Amino acid sequence: MRLRIDGCDVSLDPSAGSTFGDVLAEAGRRVASGGRVVSRIVADGREVSTRFEREMADRPAGELDTVDVTTTTPDVLFREALEGAIDLSHALHRDAETILSSLRAGDIATAGPRYASCIESLGTFFQLAGSIFNAIGTGVFPLAVRSGSATELPTPPSATAGILQRLLRAQKESDWNSVADILEGEILPNIKGWSAFFEALKEIGAK
Image (tube, rainbow, N blue to C red):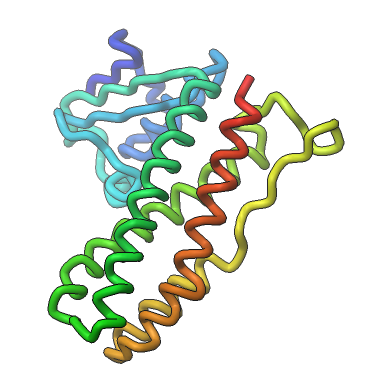
């Protein structure tokens, strides 16, 4: 297997392991040693998402021809993640309001297809939100302002996972009134809270 980092071929350490996951772990260590972070992975022409990466982790590295790793700096990645999260939060808020309007009107046929897409996007958004928050806590994304200084870091919304679970449970039971109640009373405020959190982080700015 050929490994390239930012377009440059990198020799693999045979003792590091022989699976795709091992190769990515080694690439990550090399990238981190230079003060950078991985921003994109392409395996044999296919972009590797976080989910796809987990699914491919145990695949023998010899089954792949070329893996291209693109890197960036933590602050650039942070800004890109924030912009993406803010844009997605606004889009989700609009979609959830539209779905809620249809559900309140008893128009399940119209709400259904949009709801299915919204649920998938909600899962992606909450995962992204959690990743950004965890990266701040572990120092992967350094902020210009730290807790205890003149400007305190904002607090993110809580109970995100529980809200989504309740929403999915109500959907499974075809309890659309409860779905509407959860959208209105919990999902919309939670999305709005995350959006405000990301906007505040953007205002603070990364180093």
